[in-house]
Image 1 (spheres, rainbow, N blue to C red):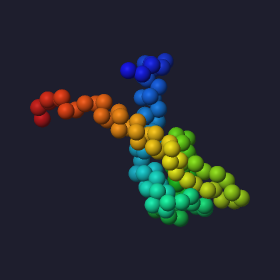
Image 2 (image 1 turned 120 degrees about the horizontal axis):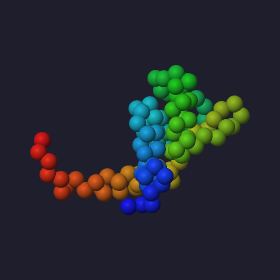
Image 3 (image 1 turned 120 degrees about the vertical axis):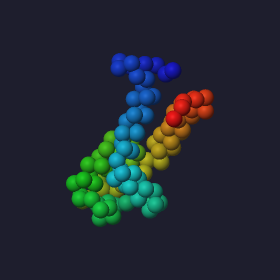
Length: 111
C-alpha cells in the first residue's frame, strides 16, 4: 500500500477521491463530454451549450479546474476552456488500476 498521510489514507487514495468527487455531478460529466466532443478548446461561455445557468456552470468549471481536468485561460473578456488531456490520461490509468486492485473475481458473497 502507498505511503499513508496524516488521515491514515494514502496520498494516491486522497488524489483519486478528489478526481472522483469532481466527476460526481452529471453537469461536470456533461462539461467534459462537451469539451471532448468539440475536439478543440472553447472560447466563450460554455453555459450557452448546457441547460444550466451561467453561475452553475461556472461553479462546475471551477471544480473541474481545481483538480486539473480542465484548464481555463483568460483571453480578453472571455475564457478559453480545454481538457487537460494528460491529467485525464493519468486519472484514467489510476482509476483503472484502483478498480482492478479491488479483485472482485475472488469474492463469493451470496446475494
